[in-house]
Image (cartoon, rainbow, N blue to C red; front, side, top):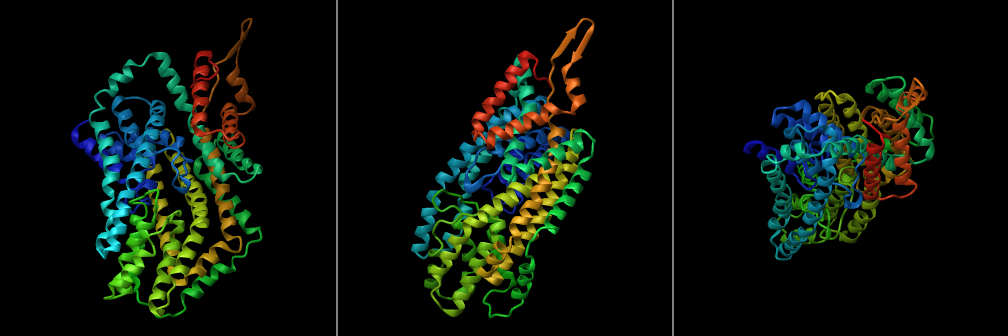
Length: 536
């Protein structure tokens, strides 16, 4: 790999890491370019082999399709898995199953980078406190920008060095792998996506009966050979029927437009509100730290409109920022309604000259937990996997660009208008907007409808991306019985669905940790290879 290729890959890898702000924060970075399917397309374009990049990215994506990071916890990090694993696999000529196996170690290395970044960033937070105390407010609100130093060091440098210096050793390493080890790694890589699907189902399945939707999607493809688009349409139809014929009070949604139309005196114009919105979107996790989490982003958002709220009043501006130094953490995009509420309440406090600091802090603290749960389940745990599942189905084994392009366009087309709507509604209505979202069972039914679509699509791509076979045969005289053919005559790809359900059982019912589950799959690959119990 030549210098400029390694440089470009490292730049994209840094911009798509979880704490990078430059691609509309996580929206265009971590949740878009950071998805291995999309990363594979970009890496393939840089290395001159888009098809191979997408095929390898899709294989790694299937493994991590159910990755959710609730409360800032990080069970695995796909950044290194994608931006180091994919290019090294492409240039070495290794297949996708080898890349999936390699991604495991790289993902845990990425977790180390995540926690190192979040730990060191406390230094910047304390600097921000001192700036506010000393009245250096412009320096305080620029801490999220300065704090990118840590993320750059922990992301750009390792990715660049691994690709530029490590690339020359990878082909030699691959050719030196003995046949038996290569066979085990290939088998392991072919079954590991089942862990990703089980992780997703862990968040989506609310009742045991929901597993029927997963089985239904599997049958549509395995038995009836349905393409992914008709599968999605069937899922949408069932979700629509579930919402339509359930008792849900949707009348509260109409109150949003009514309350937004109420006239009130304002200090901020539309441009100011959009400035605050974009600052929240870009900088929400830019200086992520264990001490304050997303508080610096709230401070930057308010700091950018402080002159409108308290013109020529430095003491009031200082007090404004000081009261938001406290810990704040929520899912930042469905939860964007909260900074909108904070902005609206701060504006009203500035107008009325009332001391609302305690009320604003209480509302902010009370809402961050509920909206973190809604965002992690509805957006990260449901919408993103559904879109990725469709994209994987479109790319399949062909390496088509349609999959990643669909995901990028669909994801941003949904989330950009939605986050603006939530932020603007929060600003316009204050704490009343949160009450509307949390009332009437609306959130629960929308979540259930999306879960139906998600389970059907995940069932479909399970049989598309995993085809576990057995190599066992039985001989009686001149007759040879192929056990795999016999099983498939009863139910196509039956071993895959049984192994998938067993993985879900271990994860959910037996509460097996992800690390132990990896060890189980490694053992299964070793035993399967040497006994011919499992083959690819």
